[in-house]
Length: 309
Image (cartoon, rainbow, N blue to C red; front, top):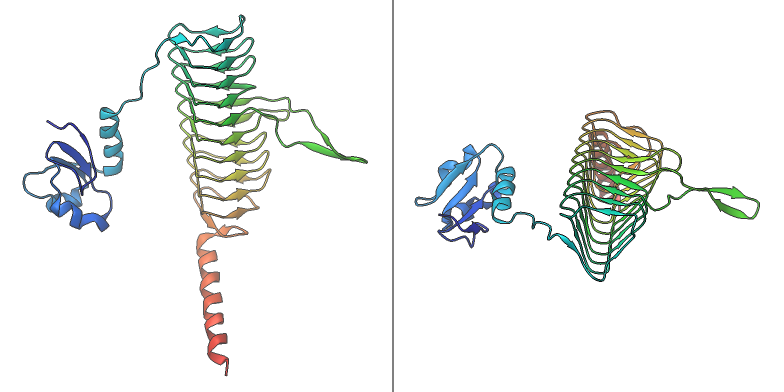
């Protein structure tokens, strides 16, 4: 019988752990865990008395096992007395609305949704079943699918950064589109997703967006993409399915990143990225090209140092 998950170094006989990196082989050999999730290549290193749970992807196995011990807390149906719900809004009786939350006119809150303390759901917003809106988050001009998680402080559906330059300076262009978020999307704390200017901003099913990410108006993000913290995507860019973008990368507007491409951390992407390629650097280019350039610069710098008297 296993009673919970724990790290290799501290796990006891009633706990399960995992190994996904050969760097921690010494910890595996000395672990006291009752069971360890490992790749077939590592099974021989599991000590006697510890059960090897052999899987092709140990980290994925760990995620699923840990979720068994720590499932997402279910909604506690009801509307807190301090919440403000417009009479024209619909809140499913199985949903939970927390203290000081605000639900505006015409909004629809689906079954088993959880609206956190101080969250604001704007007029006519629709939430599918099992959505979670974190504390102090705001959602406006948006349609959310099922099982969408908006983390605390995120801003979904505010006006995008659109203006025209007039004789007296910038003049705001009204933003008329929506944000469409498909099923099983997570958007991290304090991230911002702007509503479309004329067409809609779209976040595809299964995508994971980290904290402090900015997505501009009219951007279309495909299915199962991963955007790491501090990524910024300018308006009308298209991110196709299964793209991964490293932290602090910035993408110019109106470009396309092809399916399954990978963008390195702190990259500055100014041109289209073909499907399946890995790009890095600023300005971004194919990663191999960038690394060759860095190597040449290092050699030139070394020669310059040797030539000094």
